[in-house]
Length: 309
Image 1 (cartoon, rainbow, N blue to C red):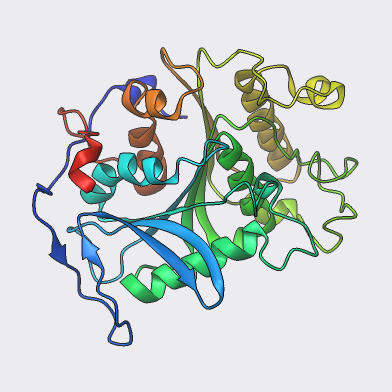
Image 2: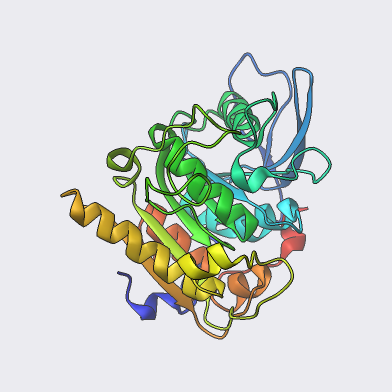
């Protein structure tokens, strides 16, 4: 468990981004990728799916890849901008997919079997695309999601553990519990819409995971799923549900003799706002510390989004 002191602002940008530079990219790529800017790209190959990309000027030849998934506000660009200073400090490429409501209204559950462009497949195509464009390590990547994106993130990690190095969940509305008696997405039992999905505890429990929720994120807002089934199993707020899921994952790992790593962090003085959690609760710093290791610096991260236009 991280010490609560880690929540104090501690990271700073390693390089000034007032000017951009072209990053060396594989020879087969025709379109140059500009480092130090948030770029909007279309997946192509017949797909209209879009994503936002940030390549740091500090990136090495084959940098790690960090994927951050938005909630129902679809603020993918904001995700890329607010994680950009940390990406610059750590030398990590950021991919922020966009899942429009018109085409991916159920992306939180990864999509359905008859959807040829369901969210899981679209994400994998984007990851592969970014790997080819930037040289980032795409076979295994690091995953984060906030709110609805947090639902996507933990479910993707549970169903595709071979692709995820580590992941973090920010204030998910509700969770898939490691319980074979419950049908997906409540538990691990296959459902009609995803009959071939295999959720194997011994595989997904081996991935280091963290849940972060604002300590004031206790409101029963309209976006929060509030069925009697979910309330009874998981609690009535995002704060309570996050704690219960972490406890269930820890217990299941222990029961199976596995050394699972599951942390829960309550972000101080934060409600259910992505920007507030980033700026006031230092959520980005805690996430990157969890995923990539500590880079302590007494100065505060500069979240001025204008730098990355």
